[in-house]
Image (tube, rainbow, N blue to C red; front, side, top):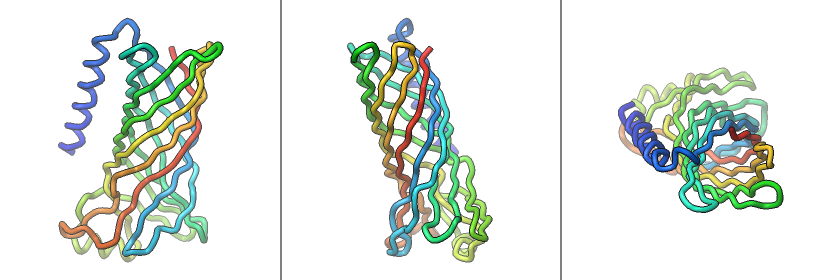
Length: 220
């Protein structure tokens, strides 16, 4: 929890420092859209065999000008991720509060503006469940499992993963003169979500979020 609090404070300090330099020109917006996410990696050397699951995201952001046509765009999103079982109807559903900070290039194009951006994100898991196909298992967030917790997971009583996710964003879109925008985005998780067991990383085991989505936004 201390690590999460320090990360939030550091991100907030950066945003406010940038905002203080551009108070008159900073704009704010809302955004909502559909996610198409999956999990990739290996568990015990075996590839994770899942397919894309549909979720959603909703949140707010700011655009802070740093140069002509260039902005820093921090935001806060509630977003759902996970995956679906390939041979069945079980779904992994995980909810996150996510903090993206993108560098945005926004030149005038026609009557509106082109949107091109990239940057990192940090996500904090706040809840989850595996449900369907006879499964009804809570997802809990831990970085290091005891022997008993690892056994409970193997027996299907609970599913553990790390609560902290991070990775990179790419986005492309268009903002109309009415301030309504449509955006495509892709996201690649870089954090291994699979926890340690007794302080040791399991061999040939890693699990990462990946996905893309479509969203609609409005700037005030």
